[in-house]
Length: 88
Picture (cartoon, rainbow, N blue to C red):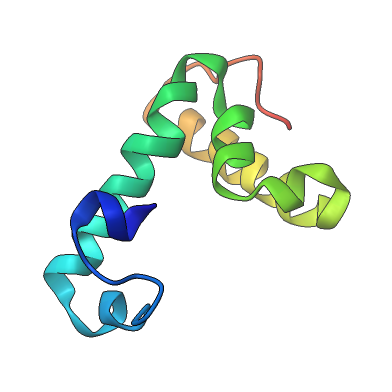
């Protein structure tokens, strides 16, 4: 999907993303805009699910807890109230 959207051969040459720094950023931005941005209004937990769905399905509960902990810590440091939907 990313290869089609950005016009490169992601199936035949997936390493091209690692070799080309411009393509790296384009692919990262494509992923964010396609998968994460649409769920931003659903809370931090939805962004975890969009990026690492396996973790949210019980694949790595400690990693999810660590992410939520970091989120809460940085919200506190910036004086921001964390959202209610922080977990998967």
